[in-house]
Length: 289
Image (cartoon, rainbow, N blue to C red; front, side, top):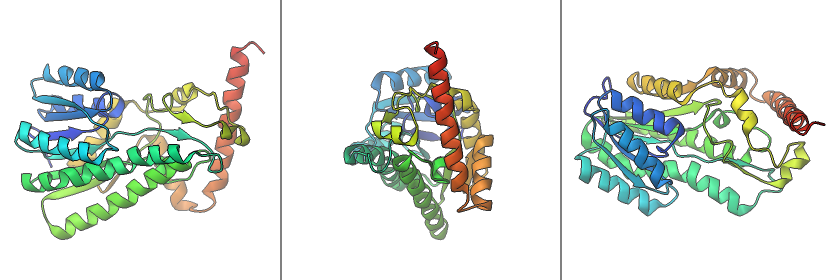
């Protein structure tokens, strides 16, 4: 897909972060938009913003964990826009917990959004993308889809699953020669609200982590803006890349796991401990201790 002009892109989680940045970048390129988010007010605000750039933009509240809702939205997008060429399965949430302490409900919650949301979006839109004659599925995994990290078992499981699912999808689409392709996206630290909005379980105290950490420390290590992430993702679609790393830390994760597929775990433990110590130090400093 060399040009996005006059194409129609559907984006989940479009009310903020990478989703919002994708919507605005695509609008500037003349791409019409079908936006969804769990936050109806936020996604309508983004749609209104993109309309000022001269494109048609529709907005819908959608819970991507709800299969029927996603399929209904996909049908509505085609009814409203006449076609759809791209689906960005971007919606995601975060969960911090030990495996031992994890509540089943929390694990089901994160898998429902971060993995099943991708599956629902892919299956709901794929027939429409094929009908358009030129389509692309873009699924958001993570650097945590490359490496296991203490306290991130649910997030890791979902993002590893997205990577495998998308790799398989890409292979099948190439075998079908149907005019549709797929890309797996692996962002590193992006300056969004996902860490601040994370669910955190008290069990992480056993790992030396602060169960009351508000995620503010993430802002200090996140190196990439949503706007830069959107540019990187769209460039990967234009070049029909199978997989794209977003941010310098993502490239570092990729190389470490390639060079040390088992031994990277020791480094992950050290980084997690170091991060926990830094959070504790900031908290102590803030309280004047």
